[in-house]
Image (tube, rainbow, N blue to C red; front, side, top):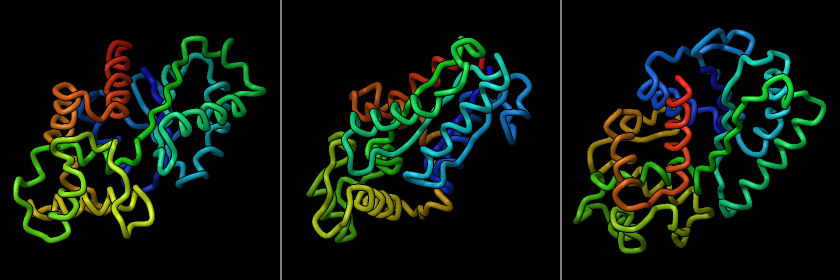
Length: 233
């Protein structure tokens, strides 16, 4: 199976998705471009943020169209940010429809599966789902206040709003994650996500979904990974 994966960011997401693909499909080899794919490989493309990633969709669809039958899965993984899940999904769907005009994809790649994966509201929201990291009794003042506002170990992080004083939900979710990990001796940055790349972290998020039904947008990624496995990744 060959996969083309477009992620929104240029720092965290390429590192995280590469780690997760390696974990789930160790035989899958990364290629630089669609033209370099042979068999059982993937191409991981950074969209350079929002809304720039939308401009990459048409080019990738054209690359896929020009190589009949080579690509089996095309995933677009982006944040919802301040939008609802449904609004950002619809926006990506429109970009796909516009980008596909002029291609012959239904004929050249009839088995191509296109999947939109929305990180609701951002990838740090998913990382907050590791319920083994938030202490029962936080020590830092910020984390005490964050947990009092919303306990991510008990309630679905995807439902968490913006804490007063933060400009966006995304900025608050990232601050909460950094504070939560810091109390366990881990440092998180966009450039160096460190502990979240470990297999045990992914497995804990997967277990949280199965046990609670939380992180439904992360479950969409798990479903995509399962489907890719069934296709022979």
